[in-house]
Length: 176
Ligand SMILES: [Zn+2]
Image (cartoon, rainbow, N blue to C red; front, side):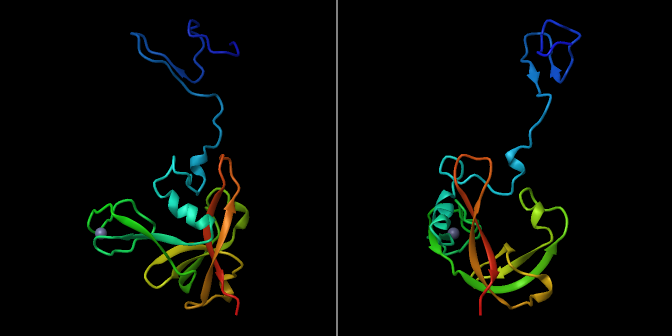
């Protein structure tokens, strides 16, 4: 076998598909790198997501979401079309940065890429009043938590193999 695929060499069958009749050749790499798609965080630029404004706001320290300007429905996560009335007249509104722990659990296995070293860690459902969301809870031990505990927003930067700075929201127990 040669190091390079030679379409004229019928003995070379490494990871290649070739059909006769003028069709395209499909080639698969010998070695597949871990795709970025396995990372938990989506791309955050205008070119890659229609909710880039959510991430821009978060980068500036503000948790926001979309509110429908036709029916008033508040969504989370942010939408580009209202799931209630199908309007696309949505506006970003601020969400509170403090809420209460509605429920929580510990992740001990199966953590998403980039969170493996954090295991075990706590995730919680946070009640912000008008909406609830699930989030990674930092600086929290399961045994120290109770339903109803006050928690506050924490914004983290994501260091990953993409060419722009990414951020995400977490929560942590509120300092009392
Ligand atoms: Zn609506």
